[in-house]
Amino acid sequence: MGKAGDGTLAWLRDRNRQRVVAVLRTQGRISQADIARATGLSRTTVSTVVGELKDLGLVSDVDGRGSQPRGGRPGVQLILQDPEQVVAGIDFGHSHVSVALADLAHNVLGEQRRDLDVSHQAALALDTAAGLFLELIGELGVDRRLVIGAGIGIPGPVDLGRGQAGSATILPGWVGLRIASEMTERLGVPAAIENDANLGALAELTWGAGRDCTNFAYIKAATGIGAGIVIDGKLLRGATGTAGEIGHTTLDEAGPLCYCGNRGCLETVASGPAIVQLVGRLDGENLTLSRIVELASDGDLRCRRAISDAGREIGVAVAGLCNLINPERVIIGGLLSRTGEVLLRPLRESIRRHAVQAAAESVDVRAAVFVERAELLGSLALALQSSRERIPVK
Ligand SMILES: [Zn+2]
Image (cartoon, rainbow, N blue to C red; front, side):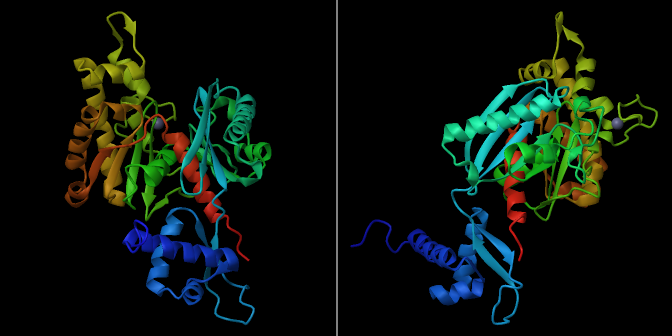
């Protein structure tokens, strides 16, 4: 009798995986066909093992052109990522900075958070993030040279071309600041930047309610309302990075003026401030959005009504999105999603009412897995994705 597990499927897979990894380790870069030849495994087995290793972030594709000394057919080759390597995620909220580290197998290793007036103190926020990063790698005993990239989240639109905040009204202290390059300089590693709704979508895609799904829309319903759209497993960014600004969909042309300069946007009736204004004071208490969410979950009728009305309005805009992109799933995140069905039921009804039948019938509307940590986890997912895309092509 052999060791426990010998001969089982899991053991076999593990052994195959070790053989593939060993070849990658000795060869540096190698095609899938050559791995099959070197290990004696079938091409199908190699393809399965390589797929698993890719899912774990341990193997990446590189362009094989120029690396065929005997003038062979150029093609995709594979390289092994160092399992010791890590990425950093940085989340700038309006009033906090969080930093986390993850390894390439998608394990979150640690997190740090500090409260700070981020909106108005950009330079201090960037320095604080760099300080938290150093504290964290010290605490975890990670060699700084093993950090290969960082993802940054900001609570507002991002100008991807310039790597800076795309709106002066949302982050007043950050105007003109090249956030990605400032952070790259402070951390000494390449940094990528995204807005909060797109990061929420990446967090759900990597670890949450979108893991088994390649076409979905993530809606962040909190102080603002934004969408992160995933098509064929990739984030849709648009020409300048502002895709998904669903909060500024016009619902009523004669409606109240929105801070964006238009009238009757979704945010004028369903954003956090709109809900707070609608509910007003309760028993002499000035309510915050999180208090309203709490009261609605506890059964307070006025708070429940305000949130379900917001759900109905959000559903109208999401119905339009369903008509355009026909998502398999709509994942609702942000603070409002904490109320569960109070928000989701009217939202689903609105989609059924306003979207074409085929799109409305097939879409599965559910709550996000992450609420408070969505942006931080998303910034890690962004760093993992960007470091995969940055693998050198010879
Ligand atoms: Zn607007």
